[in-house]
Every structure is written in structure tokens, then in C-alpha cells.
Length: 108
DNA sequence: AAGGTGACCGGCC
DNA sequence: TGGCCGGCCACCT
Image 1 (cartoon, rainbow, N blue to C red):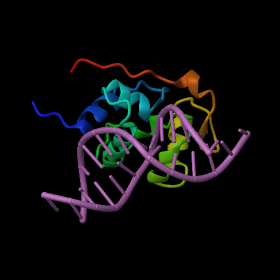
Image 2: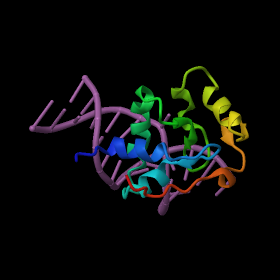
Image 3: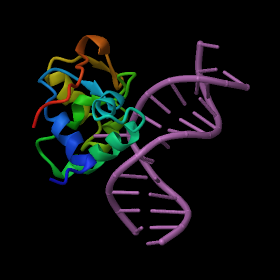
Image 4: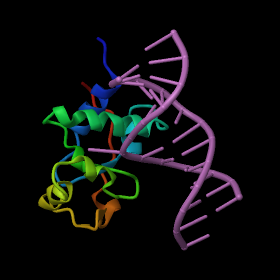
């Protein structure tokens, strides 16, 4: 079975539970490419076509909504997170560690 | 086919 | 203390 790097990112991103967030690096590391966090972000860029991928739950390690600019509207990403009970102030997730979800390699 | 790019990360100055 | 730079690897033109 040919599995693209992107597909793995999407698959893992879909595992992110409601009200939880994770970082690009964490996903990359879970995929075995800790130093390929950029690829994860890139994959998210292509995830716009997919509806099942909660890209808004993926932020950088500082909890900053770096990718918010890629979402529709100005603060859509922030609203989505707040809608899930995550407090966001000025594109920065409050208590990021508290809401952080460690991605685990799921069995497909 | 080769080069550029990117929603990052970590370390160094 | 903050800002800058390089590395890293797959996708796009």
C-alpha cells in the first residue's frame, strides 16, 4: 500500500480529540520524522481540500496560531478553538501545555 | 530534472 | 532578552 507522507499527517490529525491541540513537531515526531515539522505544516496547507482534517487544532510548539492566516476570515481558527473550550488570546493559546495532546502512532 | 519553497524547530549570537 | 540562521525533507513548477 502506498502511503504518502501527507496521508499519514492527515490520518494522525484526524485522531486529535475534541478540545485538544498538538504541534507540528509532535506530529512529525510521531511519524518518525521529528525534523520534518515543516512537512507537516505543508501537509496542512494541502489539507484545505479535506474536511476531516482539523487543521485548526495544529499549532506550532509555542501554541501560536501561525497558520491562522491560511484559514478563511481573520480569526476563524481562533473561533474554532474557542468553540472547543480552548482560550486563545492574540493568536496565542492559553495554557497550551494543558490542552496539548501527544499524538500516538495509531494502528490503521 | 533541478531548484525553490514552506502553517517548523532548535540552537547560536 | 530577542532576533537570526541553518537544517530538514517532501511537494510543486
